[in-house]
Amino acid sequence: MVARCKEGDRKAQYELYKLYSKSMFNVSMRITNDYTEAEDVLQEAFLSAFRELNSFKGDATFGSWLKRIVINKAITKVRSRRLQVVPIEEHQDFAEEAPDYDQEEMDYKVDCIKKAIQALPDGYRVVLTLYLLEGYDHGEIAEVLGISEATSKSQYSRARKKLLTLMKEETFLA
Amino acid sequence: MSDKLKDFVQAHREEFDSFTPRPDLWQDIAAELPAGQTAPQEASAPEAKVFSLNWNTAWRYAAAVALLVTVGLALRYLSVNNAQTSAPLATNGQPVTLEKIAPELRQMETRYVQVIEKKESKLKAMGAEVQFAELDSAYNELKKELYTTPNKEVLLQAMGDNLKMRIALLNQQLEVVENKNSDKKLRAL
Image (cartoon, rainbow over all chains, first blue to last red; front, side, top):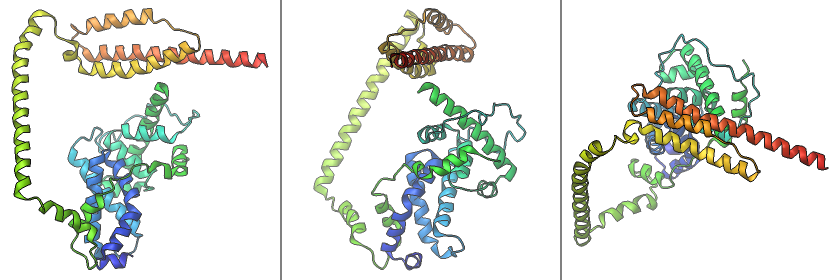
């Protein structure tokens, strides 16, 4: 199918779009946290994927190659908003003060987690979703975001704590 | 390091993909792609429509737009005038509204009050009640101070805590009543 797309076969392109648009849209939605922006990202990503299909060597699956494009575009979008509430470079040596909710038995719920993710500040949300939902490891996150692996790790653990606090609040108000 | 959150998310991975892009997004993408060898008709059809706009109908659209613009401008002019006449009244007659001092207050109030009312009615349905007399008077005191305080954030925080305390109390009371009810049921058995 990818080979047919390389030749500009519109039908094959549509097949690929049908196959990947939903999951890619959710990736982009989680990073941008904005429906219109997520759609822009999706459109741009598919366009540039089809245009640069020749540079796709096939050393990864098409899905993960496309996902990388989507993530990069989404991150650029978020950065251009300049709304980074929690700058990624900062807080390197922050004392771990928040209580660790891991000890407590927490009843995880998908809806609750989704809501809390949307309430996270941009910087936290990006790292957390890449790690938790896109299955990237800290090395890959560091590469995508242009930060160090240690920063990615500490950002993740802080984002995770923040998420759990938000979820507590959510159940409190429920 | 075991991460229960990660395990949970992975187990429910599918459920997290809940959004869908609008169905016609593909048309936009297809329109911008270089023409393929087997370009289907569906992609070019909507484009043809855009050019079918002739001068007869264009006139009507232009008139409609012009009308909207004039109405919009007129409304704006009116509201600016209104604001000019009413603004001095507000500062002379009565104190500045809370809305101006702390616009975030209303948002906080509606958010918490909704929750409180919901829980209160639930509790009432179970035949119990919680009185907030002291919390109420404390809250009103805080609200009065809001007009004069130099430290708005601290006050707002206190007001938020006040509202949250009610929710906590209601939660507690609900739990107590629920426990009582289940006890009764057990005994009845």
